[in-house]
Length: 190
Picture 1 (cartoon, rainbow, N blue to C red):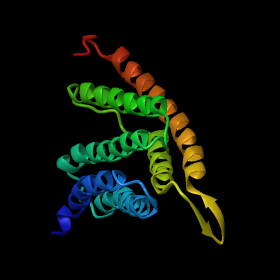
Picture 2: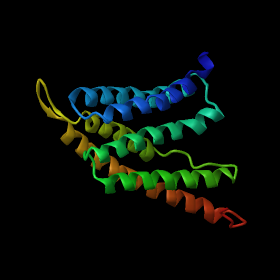
Picture 3: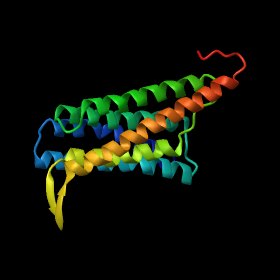
C-alpha cells in the first residue's frame, strides 16, 4: 500500500475534479466555498504525491506519466468552469491551456529521443501560482476574516502572476527544446 501512496494521491486529484465541477454549476457562497476547499485539497495532493515519492524513493513510470495529466485536468477543468461563471477572462485561460498543450507536446517529442524535458523551477512556481489563484477565484465572494477579504480580487491578482509565469515557463520549455533539437544528429523532430 505504502509504495502506491503517491499514485493514489495523484488518482485522488483526478477523482476530486467532478465534485468541483458539479459544485460550480450551483453558484452561491456555500457551493463556491465547498468547491474551493475541494480544489485546495486536490492541489495539496500535487505537493504531497511528489514529496512522498521522492522522500521514500517511490517514484514510478506510472506516476511520472499521470501526475502532469492530473494537474492539467484539475487546472483546466476549474478554469473552464470559471469562464462560464464570468470569474476569469477567456483569453487568459486560452493562453494557459495553449501553453499546457504546447509543453505537453514538446515533452512527448523528447520522450521519443529517450530523454525528456525536465520540469523547471519556473514551471513549478507557475503551478503553485495557478493553484493559489484558482482557490480564491472559486471561492469568489467577499468574507470577513478579521478584515474584509475580496477573494475574487485576490484570485485575479494571483491569476495574472500565474499567467506571467505560465508564459515565461512556456518560452523556457521551447528554448530548451530547440537547444536539444539543435544538437540532435539526425535533425528529425518526429
